[in-house]
Image (cartoon, rainbow, N blue to C red; front, top):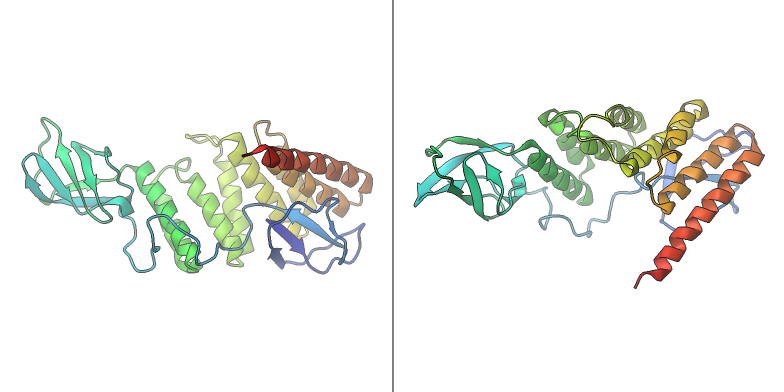
Length: 293
């Protein structure tokens, strides 16, 4: 996704405004200038527009008319060694999921049945908990559904309210998703704060992969540049590009943004070098796409 600054006054001392607009995804413009308007271009895949309302989302029609994922439920009935639960796929359950002494054997949207393992003492109205990782995955899908339906406020509220449901490492990806939604809702300060918090949790278990780190740091750096703060952008962008195991397309975005950073600092020679390297990485991505069947 390409994010463009408005109101650039000079190529040697770019002063971006707080506002940015997103344009349709297309190959990176390198060197990083919109030739028609002399505007520098920032690349950050997470900082794009909300998907179309017609976009297919997990579990069908979306969350606006349904209850939210629950972290716990109750046993509603017992029969022949099986328990019926008021939890279902909406809550992250799947066939084979284990909820204490209950192994799920059949799952529907808002209810399920499970076999009670030998020795399990289960009674009607007993409360069962959904494992945190399973619950967080369900919430993430629901957040995506809400965003795709156009309800950014509810999507952001659900993500914020669920951050306490797991450890800082377990909820990190949800925090990153919230940051992207904050940006799309125009809350750029909140987006920066949430990306910063996610970056501080990279090494909390489960540790973030190099790709996750690079995506988050690149988005954070882009937001600093949009604020006109190249000094703060320098560290996350350099950390992002230092990640080894990332694909050429992502590396091209980061190198491009480092070029914009260099332009803002008045170092056009360094900017040209970054743009050239970004162009080479973008070409690798295009060649890889051409080879795909």
